[in-house]
Length: 322
Length: 283
Image (cartoon, rainbow over all chains, first blue to last red; front, side):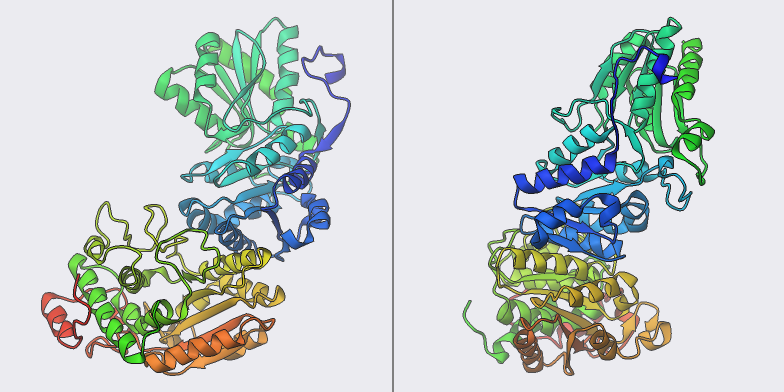
């Protein structure tokens, strides 16, 4: 489908966003000697090996003990270290929510919680590992910044940027090989939404892997005479409310697309912004109150209604409600 | 700070116990039992053992650091911090009240000097202390990091994750203490969840373990902390099992879990204060 479309963004290579994290961490480590890495027995999966090799004195294998890892990271910030914790998104959030809440968020500690294998695109491991609630949990915590970049380049840029930001951050990325379609030289600005494609009929707010699906959906809609604006919301919190309101003031309706539950995700944040400022019709593309299952990423996005075709359908539905 | 005699430390302890009781009484809430039981430990630490600066800096470079994991005994910590100059003793009047820096459980949110992390949800403090200790090692700072936990708190799984880690990584600039008062909210630990042999547990995890058998005797507590210090820096984390009596210093509060989280009445306060000389001056 993608080959025959006139896409506004193209790619020549696919790569996993977790590799963007690993490469970004190495660069952050070179930029700042206070950057330290911690990992709970997933160095290979998180792509933290290059950092460990170059900075062995600043890397800590914690073993399969995520709660302890969060506490240690919080303690390390006290004399100025910038700890990056690495494990799967499920074990970075739900398993250690209270540790993050008390020792990191409430205590205002400069910990970077780096979470791989988020969402359905984890694939064959199934629902035990496919967390779809993490954005909600993390955005509810006061002081927490929540970031969900869309491809390898943006994940790398975000990793470098959060090392320079003072405060707790949740950085979410994933496992599958995914199109690289953003600029390798981009400067990542926390909290600043990126209007990728201008449009007038409907705004598609997308985050993470689904930004690519939104790019594809825009081309499909355009081929059918519908002008969609695509906005990349890489920072779920703090939310760029101005960008959301400006766009919807123009288009009059919105679709939010994310690899997350309806409850608590990007869509809820956008809906809250609209409801409080400028109510407008809106549709959700996400998982509607269910767990995932084993399968390939492509199969899962299709079965759970998270691919470009679903974004197109949601856009048409919301247009009809204007 | 000028080195204090055991008698001088005991004198401070009497005032700290008065502070604890008066704070808890004033708001009719808080945890007096284990605060009283740990008074000798806190006084020995802050007035004798710690190399610390009451002109508080979060990063504490070149200073020994203390973390309280069982945050509910905040009254004893607040008193000792105030009495050693971190903030005015007058501020103890705000304990647990609206707009106070002296939260029910210790917190950094309001910026109270002396507090480096929030605690209260149990089991987290030792992990934090380990992180602080390892950060000191990275920086070549040879100061010591202390942490206090409750004995009931040993039921939390994270404590054992931390115990395993500290030995594996040879975090030997860490001195942990367990307030071994054998009580928890619902009753004696032996009945609620038997701790059996904490010495054997920690030794098998690779720690150096000492017992301070008389945890409410100032001389013993100071000697225990000195012994713990002498064992640090030798490749193993150090555990100080501090045998205390909950409610120590007040005859009707001692040795029971009943005063874990109960405040004294007006009459009980008067009775208790009658047993504890005012040595430095009430706030």
